[in-house]
Image 1 (cartoon, rainbow, N blue to C red):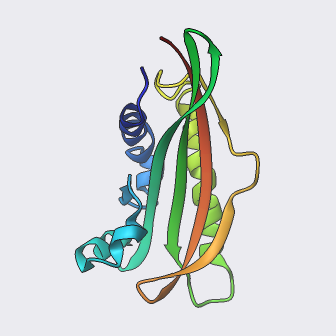
Image 2: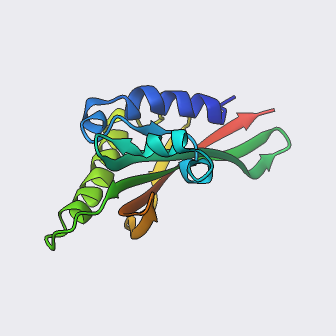
Length: 158
């Protein structure tokens, strides 16, 4: 049976450790850094790649979608991703565009990797809306945050 832990491990190896994404940042956290960064300066340091805030964070969730029959259940496994990049002070929008490009790089990597996320799901679909990009403040700095989700499905026989 596919678990969130198996999906996290497959994504770590095949997505986050991929050269296309590590070229953007070496920071990819499988937990909500915002929840703990305010508590500890050590955790706040995890936001930085070089001298700027630059990291991915992702969360894997599993939900029971529906009972297909007395012995079959359909589960959905969602991977919610966010990319944070410190905003520049220039007016070119270069870091805004860099966040859009990073989300596109992520999508391209997931698409190229596997139709089944390394056999952890039977199929997956990207979110139907365009990525969400918002300006937030982290560590007293303006930061662009791009969000995008992927949802996989797996059928389990009891």
